[in-house]
Length: 237
View 1 (cartoon, rainbow, N blue to C red):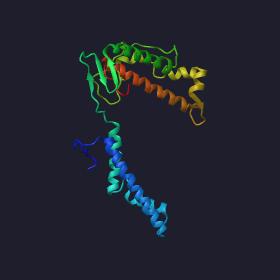
View 2 (cartoon, rainbow, N blue to C red; view 1 turned 30 degrees about the horizontal axis):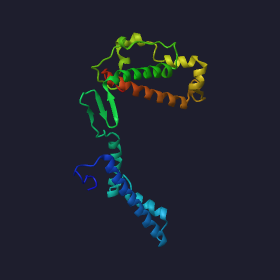
View 3 (tube, one colour; view 1 turned 180 degrees about the horizontal axis):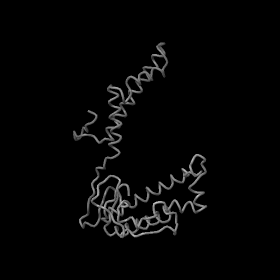
View 4 (cartoon, rainbow, N blue to C red; view 1 turned 120 degrees about the vertical axis):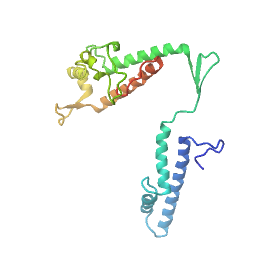
């Protein structure tokens, strides 16, 4: 069986098995094209139309045929392999001061400098990029905010905590108002649009760049949260 590793008789990894299925699909596609070309030479139709007829009957994920089943398995394995964790093991040295994973080594005395570097990177992304370098925006300390760690409601976050209402009052649209007050920021983020209620719309390129910065900020923040032993953060936050 293609799904079994000959050396160990165990299941193949999803990505490797997917390669075998891709090879089978490629061979069948060549056979279909070859047969269609031969039939055109015999006066039995046109190659492209014959290929389409074969594909509609046999090479679709929606049809109950062996190739249809293979195509469905291939789609499933693409999703599974994308979420598969690597099989490499992390190991400590004898002094338990150096952690090795693949070709990467992490020393315990490097962790404080790693946290400091990630913290500086997060601050720069937050204040200079996400808050657009605006000193007029009110800043607050997280220790003054309340969070409901026992709340498991989907999409709930600290913004909805009733004890934070006074602290967060007026912050919901603070960044938008700051953009509207700045002629330079308006040119960067807004574009004229007669179909919008206010005659303006968000500039797609600027918003795409801003969203990319958000994702980079969250990526760096996750390192700080997990390595520093902080509380897990909800996806919505």
